Image (tube, rainbow, N blue to C red; front, side):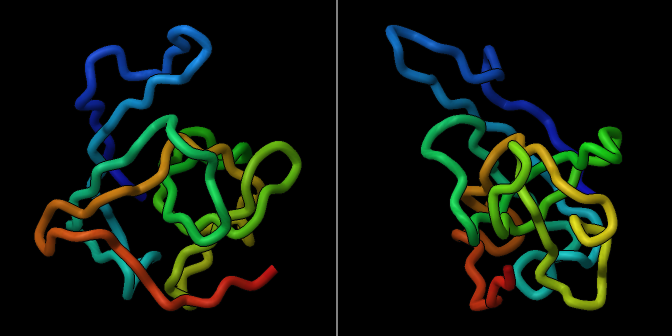
Length: 127
């Protein structure tokens, strides 16, 4: 689970002259589902818009079966007009294995607290 706060005026991506304008929002990680890549308390910057999501990206999403639950997970594959997403922690299964396809709100681009940098992992994705 995460907590998110928009930090860009006019938050939703908007079309200007045929191109989408991206926006940023902040998200706070809650829970162990992305350990070891992300930990409880990590503060993230998330880009809404920009390049398309690719397998392996860390994303913020909501499950179609649980639209009230905002999560941070890894995109595995595009499926049924959304994404199959999984946490990096194999022992936590509150991801697409439990809730199915998710709709992505944005892509994590930077962790700004407590260890600034781009979150990366050598987690292997299964299809």
